Amino acid sequence: MKNRFLAGVATTLLASALSVAAASADVLDTIKERGTLIVGVKADYKPYGFLDTSGNVIGIEPDLAKDVADKLGVAIEYVPVVSSNRMQFLEQGKIDLMIATMTDRPDRREVVLIPDPNYYSSGTNILSLKSLGLTEWEDLRNKPVCGIQGAFYNKATSQNYGAEIVAFKGTAEAYSALKAGNCAAFVYDDSAIVAKTNDPEWADYEMPLQTIDDAPWGLAVALGEENFAQMMSDMIIDWHKTGRILELETKWGVTNTPFAKAMNEKYNQ
Amino acid sequence: MTWKTDLPVMLPVTKPEPEPFLGLKAWHILPVALFAILGPSLGFAQTEDGGQNPLVVLMNWAPLLLQGFVFNLVISVSAMALGTVVGALLGLGQISLIPVVRGGSWFVTQFFRNAPWLVLLFFAMFLLPFEISILGLKIPFPDWLKAILGLSLPVMANVSEIVRGAVRSLPSGQWEAAESLAYTRMQTLWLIILPQCVKRMLPPWMNLYSILTMATVLASIVGVSEVMTLTGQALASEGGRPELLAPFYGFVLLLFFIYCYPIARFTVRLEKKFAVIG
Image (tube, rainbow over all chains, first blue to last red; front, top):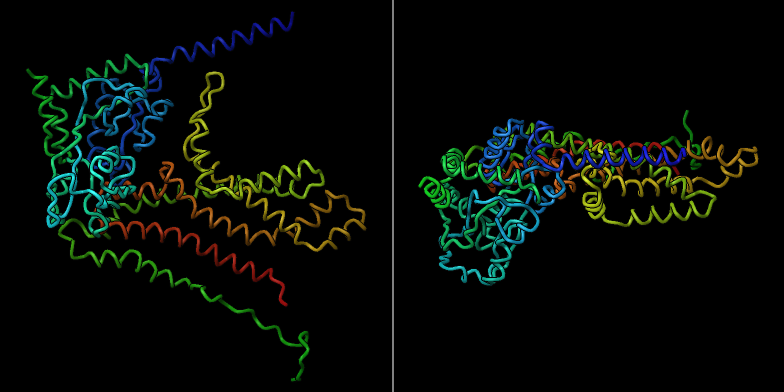
């Protein structure tokens, strides 16, 4: 009798514990309950997400994330992520939303939920000495090319064009290696390279090739969070419509990209 | 009154060598600092039109990097504390009279002592959950805590060996004398053996701490926001200017040097103090 009573109590406790878990299944409720939106952003990808001298994360993507928090009426918390852990953090529930320069690819859509439309886009290009006179991607064959660890275009550059990728931890190390002549070129995002070629210190360098792999970026929420994804879709459309992306590009010193302009026109027709 | 003798016991005690060959004096830090920070920034002074002087940039970031360094120290002290407590128990387990305990402790010690620190750190990072859920109550398990656990594993194994070695290094006469005075094994260990071991264990223990402190930068590879991670992010935020690399990494090197060098000197002093002059 006593045992059965205890079993009953245990079952009730277990059921209530489970129901708590079930109730918090929708991440939007969790965020509102917590009062904070936790967003995964890059902290080493100027100007999309980087640090100021007091250690705060700033940049285009943190600004976008702040818009989301304002819309929800909650505080914001940034978690610095890198390419190799950003999707895991989202799966684990460590972050609610990820806006971290992630290229939208089909295999990633199986792991995380990427709301449409895409919020940004970038392509791959190289920075190299003008005197090398590179004209096409095939010129990189069997030449050492600097890259960043975990960037998806490393593989493409080495497989399709036969370049020997030397991958570095950060951009500073890669730029340094390029200047020292350890590699013939540095393969990176075209928007960042354009900014670099405008720098007087890099006057001898150019972006000589046709941009390839022009790929859209996707922000992401955890799989199954349909409500949040729907909300994010509306927000992205709103960002494009109001020209928020263009405005942020200007604010952070990026030339307005063709993608952002096209999306702005598309949603204003 | 003077006399001549060749009997060693009659000779006046000569002081041991004051400094080992590579011993640096306190003021030697200064040229090291100059070399690490000023040198490169002067060398790149001609590139000043590209941006601010590297030294000025470094000064802007110094407070943040110092915060990161303090975090490294917190990780090192915590990992050392945890590793020492568990390691001491393991070490005593290794000299236990119960074969199962002795064997088990030996195996654990050897396993973790001969595993690369970074691999252990990766295991701690990716095998432990980021939060533990007990009946709806969620206890967060942040990255830095995992780093402490991961780094305390090799510390534990090394401390275990230090304890075992110190106990074994005592002359067996100590045990026999204690036994003849009817001390139990427990009493012998606590009252006679371990007090003598402490001074033997202190120098290697401090060495281990120095090594651990310098190994905390490994945590940057698994994404903990310590000084190396912050340095990388600061460099990226400055637009990846190559001339900043040397001053920034030089600064980090200097921080560790200033912290670890006194420990090394102190260890040498302790070793001399406890050394048997022969």
